[in-house]
Amino acid sequence: MVKSTIRFSESVVSEVDSLVEEGYFESKSEFYRFASDYVLEQLVESYEPVSIDYDEIKSEIAPQQGSAVEHSPGEVPFFESVVILRKYVLRGNLADAEDFIDHHYEPNHPHAVVLEELLELYRKRDERVQSTAAPPKQYHEGRR
Image (cartoon, rainbow, N blue to C red; front, top):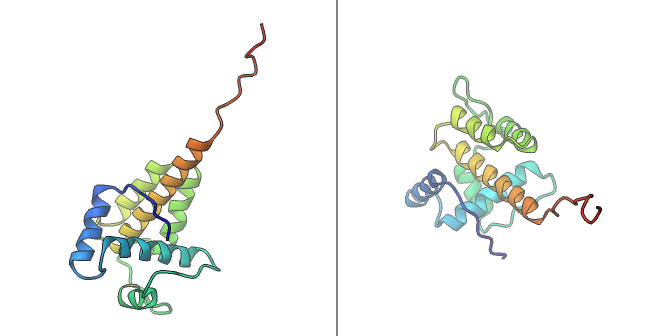
């Protein structure tokens, strides 16, 4: 496995800690691995989850495919939320993506936790891209 340091908001870490304390996951690492595998499995057609006991954990906590998922009135379905979040990110509107999550989900809602995790991954990707981008060339340098 590759070790990667990722920073999360306090609210995300607090919710993950709660899930670990309640016994849904054995550790925070297990949660983060599962959450990453879960989102990738949903978004990338050829992705095969690698987390230990992935299918067992998924069957215990994730809605069964094919079963009707009940939504509260006005609640956006999860995968629609993922698409909306991605659109905000691709347009460079990370703050709007965060606002979307905050306004459509309670902080402890499982979808909010996964969406926050996904948003954090997008943030880290953007930071890596920006840190490796070459500085703009100065075309007038050296000309006098």
